[in-house]
Length: 192
Image (tube, rainbow, N blue to C red):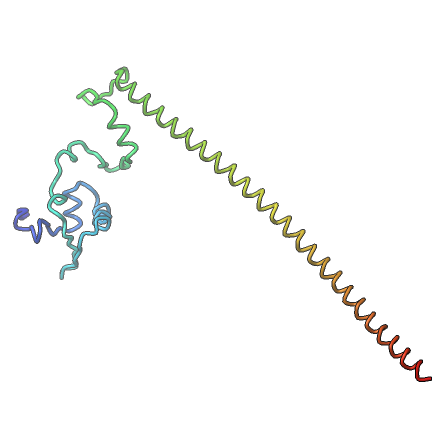
């Protein structure tokens, strides 16, 4: 592999394939692709069909401290750690160097207890929020039912009013007819 200087282009960047970027960062190719999309690094497809990415030199170098700690890396068969897992694990004091844990270590016990208390507080907060949202949803549902009832009452009242208006129009028409007949009778009666 060529040195960083020969592969550097422009203002301190290096062209790398997804596989090279994944190897340098210690991640999978899919993670490297997501990183490139997230950072909006320029990509170019070569004549050989391989995509090369213009990666800044700071991100193109191996990070031995990250690889040594193993943060964010997973071995085959393990799931990658989430940020919450990392926060809990990072808050724990270092264990014995032989790889065995010391469950009776007071610092470890305190750290685990504080992590558990934080999780309990978070769960209690989430339950309180859930109860609040359920109460709010119940109030909204109750209001919707009230509005449906009011709408049904308004529709019924409108139908009743329309029926009454129709009846009144019929009465007015009959009165006009009778009034016309009366006038005609009166006019005919005067002629005699």
